[in-house]
Image (tube, rainbow, N blue to C red; front, top):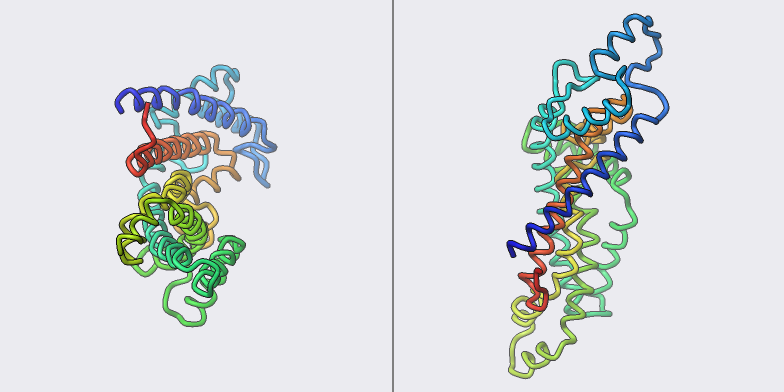
Length: 304
């Protein structure tokens, strides 16, 4: 296990370097700039701003400073005055983490039981109903589901606020929107994994010994049937926890995703680079957790 973790950590370094390099040059060569506005800036003031943020230096020096700032997080934001990239991440990431945790809870609470229910009686009404609902959830993107949820639960019923993050009730609608969309994928993956396991010899042996259907489903089939879900949850959970760009914008959630979208439009290179680098590290970390979880659930998998 220790050797596997050490090798995987070494493998993440070139991946993070490639992500940082691509981010720097893509943002730098994008149309516009951080000081592009409707009102033109006098040339002397523009030169002072570029000198203050190091944009007047050669590209190679800017690139090295950019890589250094990703590690230290001390690079000042161009659009958010008196705030560094590290401060923005520290303040906004806990919001995205909470939203992602609630969304993941909703997704697992809805998706896994629906997939188990469908796998218990395949090709029957008990299978068709949850899988039809899951298909609708897969086809319905969050930028469509979000406004529909707001229209029904907030505007018509008046149960929740349309946006914000100040009360416990403000967590419900964004978490429900994200969780329902992810639950659709989890339900279909759970059904497929459970059906594959239910056809194995050890399941037939358990039936022959007189084990009940519920016991076979929960104690014998569930552990192996969840392997596809575990594989899917790596990048999915990382995406949820690092923040959903669309949902945080629709519901005005002050999370990291919202800052990332704003920094892209503003050409705020330090914030764009810092958030992309942070997102990449989170995704790699969750992929590592998935490998460890697969080895724990499946004895055939060995970490080497």
